[in-house]
Image 1 (cartoon, rainbow, N blue to C red):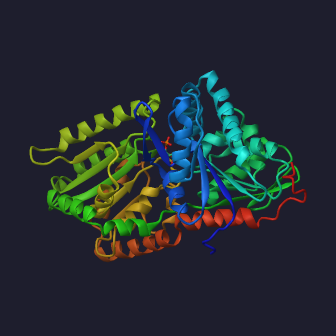
Image 2: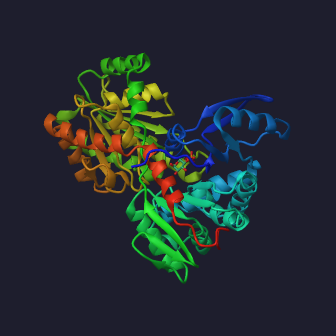
Image 3: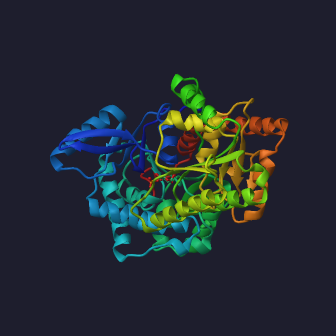
Length: 483
Ligand code: G6P
């Protein structure tokens, strides 16, 4: 597998890897953003030199924009696309996270609706194009990411038709639904047309790629398919699974630092004599946190011999706090935590340790390392990078166990996790008991098999294989982009 890529690449994602905060008037602080997409691409940036375009999360006074642009380009190779606050909110909280996100995760009951959102979505995709077009040169690969920008490839293809050897790639970081969910989407035809003007469209798994191929065939006329290509309007589009990864070496390096060792010592002392179950999730309804808490409750109820000998540490990372469904989820989760602790806790033992915040990378690594089991209970999840990070912070001695939902993409890539159905609470609870009792030899074997995947399928390999697929792709005869 070729793990290098030399061509010129422009990466476009809604979120920049850097969040800007105005600490005082005209004085800015730059922080690293979080999320699977950002961490995957940040690792890739070490191997492939690309410009990163995206929304910086705030709008700032126009007098300060040039200074911030200069700082970001200089320090991070990042190019901010500023959006008026109200428009950004309708695009981000509105159409992207209240319509597209739930539908892509097959949860139509979570969809909100406001007429102005779809217009804002189209407008933001246009504004992104306005900002990117001046930077594109002949021979470039323009790589668009994720559901916030589904219309962008089509707009770019129309505006950049005269560029020679231009390749446009698109990667979706979420699942892709079956056609009965996809067809609920407003402007489903426009979305399909836009994606079919790419050269390569990538998903985390082959199943999502297949579901996209099915949807495109249902929604548009004249689509013909071979197993992983799609032909439409004289163009060939490669549609394929490219599961993302992490850079495990970065985690292992961090594990060797004094800061992590100190954190780890502290945690070991504090939780002496207890088994630790760990959950690390953005506080998102796709992550199945209530299901996990209910299964833990049931486990403690049915196995009182474990009371006082096991804790669940649940880290809930704040996300999209302005969206109502996320606010409701927080209430539900916090009430469940209170319920379980009230029911099973004692003065000297708290069964669930719940944190609603982000923590430092050193603390996260130590948490991963100290935990006996990591539980991923998503009810739908594109891939799930936490599972990879957990494995990277374990070793053959600790050999922590990974419980993985059948509905997370990583169930297809990590062969030796223990699969759970988050909806089946009684079996989920029994599986908690089984993994706690799992013999060391089996844990070690499963860890070794999973670690092999994490070490082999890294984010650099993901990115370079996507880009090489774009690059080596036979271009349509008319080199003007040919639409
Ligand atoms: C998922 C999405 C990303 C997103 C991330 C964090 O991984 O696929 O596009 O950036 O969640 O969500 P946020 O809304 O904070 O960007």
